[in-house]
Amino acid sequence: MATPQGYGWSRGRSTLASIRLCVLQFVADPQWLIPSMIAPVIFGLVAFGLFANSGPNFLVYAILGAGMMSMWGQTLYGSGWATGQDRVWGTLEPTLQAPTPYLYVVLGRVLWNVVSGLIGGLIVYVVVVTVNGAAPTLPNPAEFALLFVFVMLTLASVGTLLAAVYVYTRFAGFIQNIGEFAFYVGTGCMFPVVLLPFWTNPIALLFPPTWALDALRYNGIPGYVGFSWGFGWDLVGAIATTAVYLGISTSVFRRVERQVLEKGSLGDY
Image 1 (tube, one colour):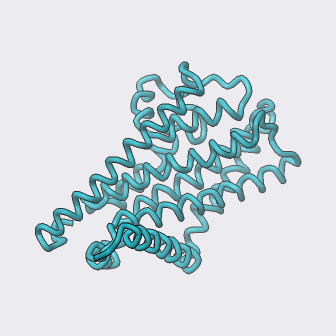
Image 2 (cartoon, helix red, strand yellow):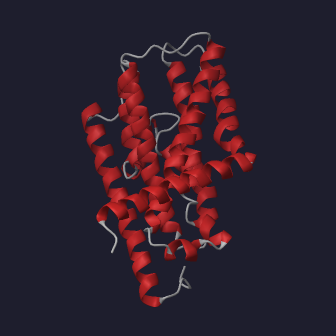
């Protein structure tokens, strides 16, 4: 009988194997370089050119907007497609039949998308700073870097939920195509949500990145005016909504596995 330590080793090994396979697929399929690394650089240079004389904080806006384009696109397409690719390739059944819960396979894919998104954001930062000739001035660079990673985790939670929802739909690609820029604008990736019509704010606050990005701007941009409740409650809201997303994702994956075991078939998915 397997021990709890054995189960933990199996799950960790499955997650690492999933990450390794994602890296190999990324290298073997260079088309991902365009949306995740090349397009954001172009977007960042355009933003830099448009807002070059707009004040001392324009560089932070340009880097954040283009960097988030890389990370948000990678999360939506990569993490959200984490289950769809198994359906297309015919690997959903053998993966679900494995002793390790399917959630840990998806976790590896999501973690890789977080890392690749950070790489894309770093490339954007280097290019824009090189063109500008100087790095942006941040009040607390260490806190800003930690918050930036936290923003990636909130994006990953959305990707995990999308991956869970895509198990139940055959229209994952359609949702991705119509949702990318809607989410990109609606969560405040390029500019603060408070600049959008007021009726959009309650909808935007349903997504963890909205809270996290507002907190990031409060930390990195002196004099920034975002949501009236300020930095602290932004963090609380981001943590709470991220926990809810991860909880829903976990319950959905477990429900799917339970139904598959009961019916002995994946015909419904």
